[in-house]
Image (tube, rainbow, N blue to C red; front, side):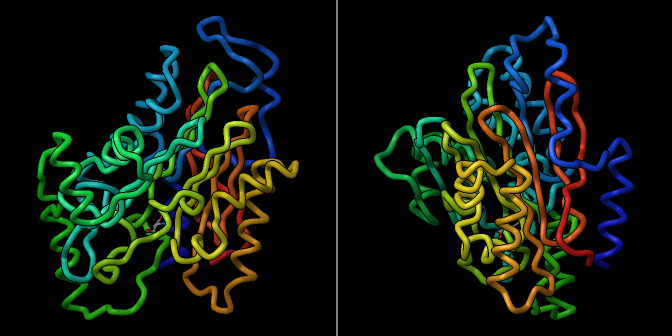
Length: 330
Ligand code: ASP
């Protein structure tokens, strides 16, 4: 099953190329006229195949001299509003009790951040997270409080459990698969999107319906600043996907950014964070985690525990899926 997924990921991304450190020297040679670029800027990277559509939407903002913050929000809203996506927003697989509960966070280039966790019945949690950031003195709102805040701010109540997700949940219940579901499948993948705009400012967004059939009330890494996402505009940005519990244990995204601060390339920073996760866990069965990172120069990288993680890159030269390097085959 796990192996099949990897093969599927590889097949889907026909244009996929293997990343080997930075393959970016190409971009430094010629600056296209249509955009003001500096080094590798501007650039967007995001997790998994759904990142392509999100990147395209985010690029519209970046291209018209917009801010990375607007770009990351607009980008991931596309994934949240896609009912065919089983791991983010509407259409996301529910928890064990059949409730779709969403986690999301956003962070800008000035350490401003906002987050919502365990949010139900709101289609675009990322925009609620942004409102928390901009219109409250807090960083995180959760559950009913987050929902009430969203309604107060004009968001509409919506049933997020699609028929397809409901059927999948009912099947899961019937089969009594009460054990840990496999994390690295097509139905369970956070969108994390990082952007650096033409001014060289970084921002990030991360949003998910989390671990399918999780215990009611479970919150993963994705709404936790420093775990699912971190941005330090002096250094770079990172975000995570995969088993949130493992990411939280090592403050994953913050760790990646701190490693870049120490001089590591984005890819190497992600690799060291992955190694730390591996060291912190005795049982690695099903423990997939992937990180993506983007530094202040616009250089990018990614790394995962197991094979099968891919990410989308958009800049003036390319819009492509890349298979991340990894520590182990399934
Ligand atoms: N990190 C998410 C969580 O644990 C899920 C994922 O990215 O697959 O909720």
